[in-house]
Length: 472
Image (cartoon, rainbow, N blue to C red):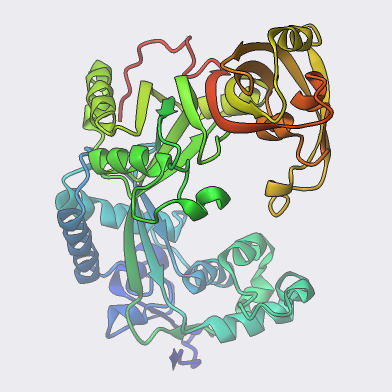
């Protein structure tokens, strides 16, 4: 870096190394000691970010970004992130120099930069810029030339704020962060500011550009007809499933949505989950999908979004293993209703086998014992990922259909969180009473051959959804 010349003018002031724009807008044309820099990036105030050619370079990069990754938006919000050192020097200069008389002196440097960039960005992006739009343009400027000096200076005057955190003894990151610097800016007085040595940068700031769009939330219910399809590609039960891409409920749903709306990422949220070998029947399991940074959402605006969602639903339902219904667009706040859904009831149908003969009177006696409460220790099959707990769960109703002397179907309505497989076979005595206990089978056992979820009693998507007009 180039240190500032410490020689003073006739008034005893050290000249500020500024670009012509900062000299005019902040220092003023008269009364302030200023040295006009040869290269705009040597300006100790704006770091050359206000250089017209540099602004054009950034604007062209924005234009190229949109050419490569277009959005169907017409409005955008600009978010600029300036170098930490520049933010600090803006305060240092204002506190140490009482001779500044520029017409834009009261205006923060960041506001001056935003105003300088907007015309070029409008031209290159073909968008209007406003506050609180769905699409945000992030431009981050970086300059790390002064980190060491700035850190030493701030440690000298604000040691408690910038000393390394002892709890992070293995973290080598610098204590010099924008959050910490912004926290102490108001405590930098004139005396402290005058001790700061201003040095000129030796190069233009590097910059990065990204666009970020507010998430889109879609909700519906899914049915699963395969006993070889996991809900997500990373579930513990997936060991027996083929590992080809798209071999999960979440991928089959989310991949189509990502492609349709050009989303960079999709997060699948379900109200519970069924095991890989369990089918989800009836009207399906409630789910929602958070689509992040969508590039194309015009088709989801206005009442036309109903047509778009119907087409998307039909496209997903071409897969024979799953089917979705009730697809709707919802808000972020409505996602919270999944928490309420934790208290839902579920209806199951289990195909069971008894090691001893069963008869109708035995089944009728069992029905008379319902409703009942059971106590379940965490099942052995999930101990690797679940805490060892005793869980009390309710069985609300039960009905049987005897198929032969050893096979029967049982339909039961249970409290959410009931491990139905373990309720049927007892899990080596970890569930009490088990179905065998309720059937008074003491000299044999009952096992489950197949299990289906018939109903998840949960209002989703919310039935009180009115026809909305979603706008950008």
